[in-house]
Amino acid sequence: MCGIVGYSGSRQAVEVLIDALKRLEYRGYDSAGIAVCGKEMQICKDKGEIARLEESLPALKGTVGIGHTRWATCGRPSKENAHPFVDCTGKFALVHNGIIENHMALRKELMAKGHEFTSETDTEVLVHLLEESFRGDTHAALIEALKKVKGTYAVAVVRCGSKEVVAARKENPLVIGLGVSENFVASDVTALLNYTNKVLY
Image (cartoon, rainbow, N blue to C red; front, side, top):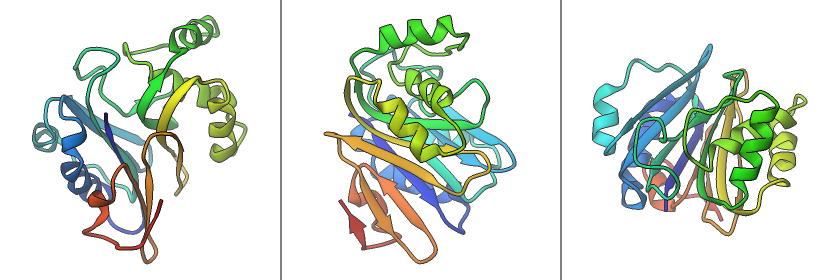
């Protein structure tokens, strides 16, 4: 079980993401990480509890981002296995709760095409599938990538140069929070209560 949060609006994303992740820490606490879209994709992640991540955060600037708190199911607890994961181009960042049953076969195919992996996780195949499927539309690329996946998931994706957080779910929980000129996504409504009481399940 892992926790996911995403934000797009006018606030600095890092503040919202860390606050929301703290409320999701019951869903996983062996590692945590965030991705913030600024002029480039900014990633910060670490092994251990969210407090450790918060202490090590550099100044991340941007109003769109995603975060994750992890309970290890595939790959040992480590900084390398913490989410978010990025594609080979550095344009996409992705977080995931669930299990990709066919990840070994997908990893082999992607490596044969030249993709480089940095973790032991099943999740990392998703961000490389997204890279393979992208033709200018993140939403369409995620749909295409997920067609190749066997398993369950809640996924959130951000892309450099876009204000969107694109999300999808199959069996695993994910809610959307509606704000004024801002929107949220999270594994649990409790992560969003500081910001909105309008939620779509």
